[in-house]
Image (cartoon, rainbow, N blue to C red; front, side, top):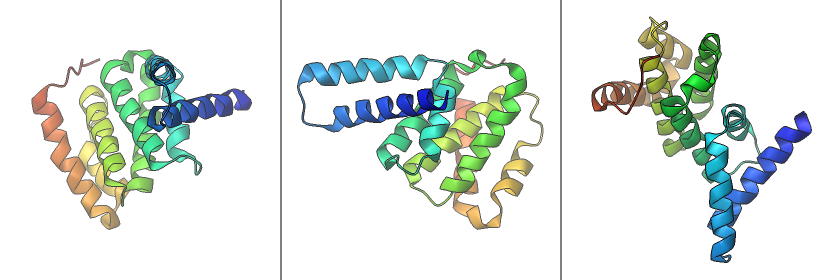
Length: 163
């Protein structure tokens, strides 16, 4: 099973590299189709975390992973059992601890992920207290960014379906 994940990560990284490379249009189209299929797959839940945690992943690939995770939370949250949402929350918080200093685009996407999850996860009652205590006083910019994003996500109604 571990080799499947590694192969999956290698395939994703290869497709991302193809998208940025000077290659024929057909190769880019094939890579695009592969990445789009990946983003819709249930495996994207775990592989985005692997990409974000892997030291061999480029900043661009990590941004792709964070953006994919945001899409999964917004549109595919029903792919997860309801009782796994707490672990998803905890893993996003852990990723924010890692990326609290940046790169900023990745941190922003993770803040959006957490905000969208907080909106949809009605069981999570102490959102602000938990985000503040988890990130701590050394992550002031990250906490401020989350506090800026949360009301934007609430008021913009980003197709969040409360579950």
